[in-house]
Image 1 (cartoon, helix red, strand yellow):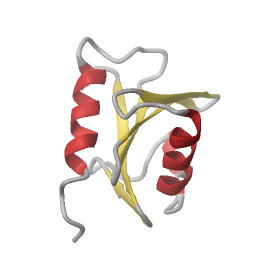
Image 2 (cartoon, rainbow, N blue to C red):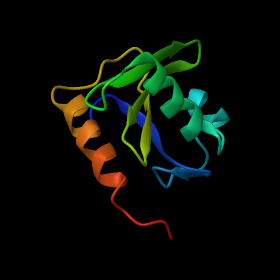
Image 3 (cartoon, rainbow, N blue to C red):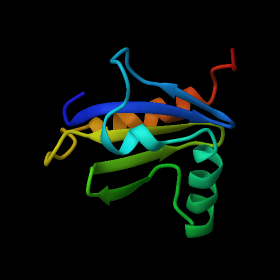
Image 4 (cartoon, one colour):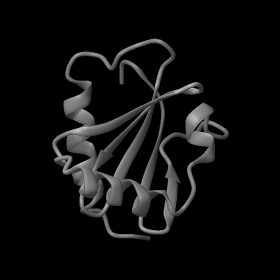
Length: 104
């Protein structure tokens, strides 16, 4: 998708790479299994709707978390670019659907 460099799927105790590239780049490289609980807890505490995304600007890149009740899509944006038209909405829908997929 335009503006997306890489992504990860976060679920309780699980981190799943979103692409077949070898290793995650920048800000995604340090995401751990406990990230889902931390991100969803922060989103709840801040009163952020699941229709919104939590976006963090880091030295290593811009990282957005699209959160649903049982899954979170962590997206690393391409350097110095915004997400393309309609991409934010697509990522929100994708994160909502990820929560419906059973754990393997």
